Length: 168
Image 1 (cartoon, rainbow, N blue to C red):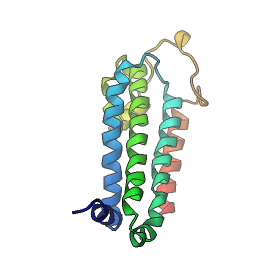
Image 2: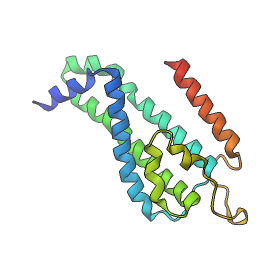
Image 3: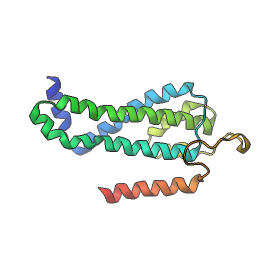
Image 4: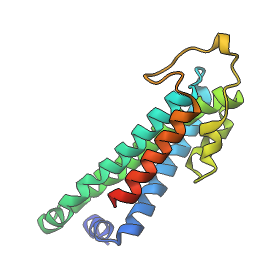
């Protein structure tokens, strides 16, 4: 089986299977990012983590926009470069989310060992909602969102859920 045939099979698969593949690639990148996050020393607070992780998830979803050019790529015999682009987005995005979750785990639990939980549905809320273990007087405001608290996290979750339900 040639690389072009593999790429064509990847591009014409059922959308549910394709998105499960995207999730799997994101998890692979995330596991690598979580392991790389063991060397992080700066924690990431809850609001900043939620903001950046949400932004990355949207970017990973947006990276699949290239799929629209799939039929033209298959006809032109250039499906494999498109497949590489489609696979690279989730792996890189997952890696960055893994790094973010390691920094968030460092803030919430004092160590980055809980970072892989960011990729387990519903269990990841434990990482999102866990309070900081760093005393208030030693905390620094990190990122564009600081001090927004749990209310903004729930509001963001509701907005993303609504966008997913009504956007499909």
